[in-house]
Amino acid sequence: MAGDPAVEHAPSGQRRDRLAALLVEARQGTRGALDAIVAELTPVLWHTARNQGLSPQAAEDVIQTTWLILLRHLHTIAAPGALIEWLVTTARREAWRVSAASRKDDLPGDDTFEELPAGVLTPDELLVDDERRRALWNAVESLPKRCGELLRIVAFVPRPHYDDVAAALGMPMGSIGPTRGRCFAKLRRLLAKDPDWSS
Image (cartoon, rainbow, N blue to C red; front, top):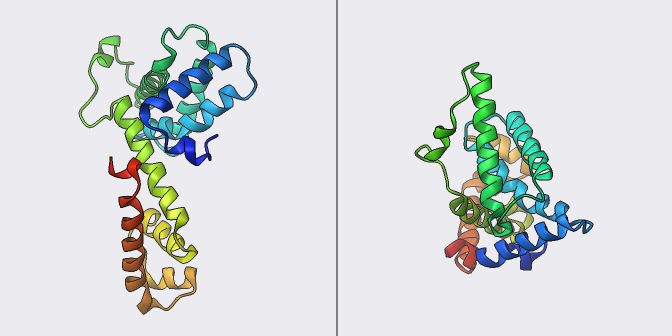
């Protein structure tokens, strides 16, 4: 389900309804319903945990704990349509707990959760952000192979040296800059046609 283009481009309302239906199916014991929820919303929870400044390992622990908490509360979530908000809030609170514990400070009181710190994305913003990331990487996947490889290096390697890029991709060092420019232009054209990116 996570790789289905129709799913990945579903409007937010449809996505919420589908996730709510999956939650109901999971409560009824439908095989694969919970797996589909996990597959689709793990990237959102990853972004939530990392947004709190956690290391990748700590973020993974937070995500795993969040899914365990969902299992414990599977039948008690009052509004299945609010599943995304419920999971994001749970992950955020767990991330704060882990962060506080790592500093060996006292845990914050419940009133700490009344207001979100500045710069923290709301569940709706996280959902939009996740849809835009999906749109971006779907567009990158549809580019020619060399463009995709080059843009991944640019995205994930801080200030890569051109000689390293040239060696990794087997291309002349002098062609990297112009190739990157052409690849970005192709990517911009693809994204301009994608409603999940431009909306």
